Length: 428
Image 1 (tube, rainbow, N blue to C red):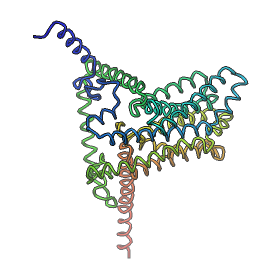
Image 2 (tube, rainbow, N blue to C red):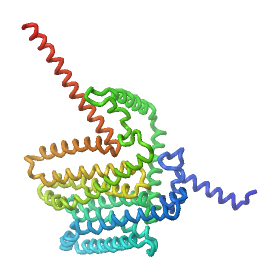
Image 3 (spheres, rainbow, N blue to C red):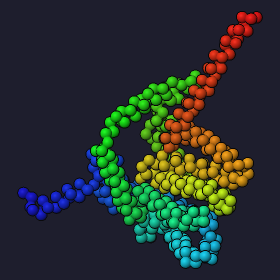
Image 4 (cartoon, helix red, strand yellow):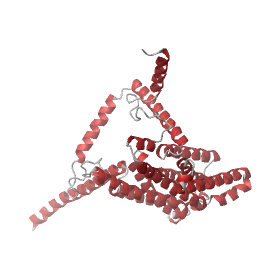
């Protein structure tokens, strides 16, 4: 028989398990999401797959290599960003704020140097993965901090700049903790944050289901999707017959074995990573911040719009860099990486239009130019890269609609032209 003490602790364990998300109530998270919260995902993988000592060392060395590249890029970004001259300007009106910025930059430099040393000499460094991971995370954070420091004048109020900075830092930190998982403290805190948001989402959805009957709406949506999918099966003659077949399946995955898929994904992840790094570099190589500040003097509304988009693009590219650097622990690695690479292209288009804003005859010409070029690039990216999936699906539907429009115009033209030809033949 079990003692009273055993029964007590079993009851306590049952209570703790009840606090965790379950498959029945929260399908978006596994039941053991918070189990072994201080255990990193890649360490669990090493144990579960019974990897050898050499394989485990290779796994850790791969992560250290990723941290090293991010730390080196972070050091270079500190000087490319132009934040140090900005500190000198801020010192004239806000000396205390400028001093805080200088101290923070110094901390980032020291952490990056420590991360580089830990990545190069892991065998003689205590907790090398945690130190290198902390330094790499700070490199990502410093990109956003320097961007906000350099562009805080563009914000209507200082408080909006502060809110913008903390929201973007929060997103990057949570994603870094879930994917990179070093240092361990960030990993544990990120899991708690994700679990909390999912729990709130679960409670909201359950309350809505109790208050509203969604079954008619679900049936209508299902019937509409079924009808649309039926129409998508018909393609004009100048498109391949299988163009819309399996529209939700990426082309590079069709007919491939598991090994071939992994090889194709690794190749694409490497390309996406290069594009995202180039995209973040575009922020500094093109002098986008300086152009943004110059535009703010005459067109503050357009300048602020560019600022918000630039911030969104930078956050997405940083998420993609994290996902493509550590794909083994990144859920949706292809979607995040592809989205970031796509944003790198969009960001290059936007910086070009930012540089040529004053050369357009008027704002209308400017918005038409950036809209058309962005739309064409989106469609081309969706057809060729096919990541993320929703852009691929949208691009195929847009091409399908465009081709049917052309085909309809051609068909109507033929119908109009034939009676005229018949009249000419009869008269002759």
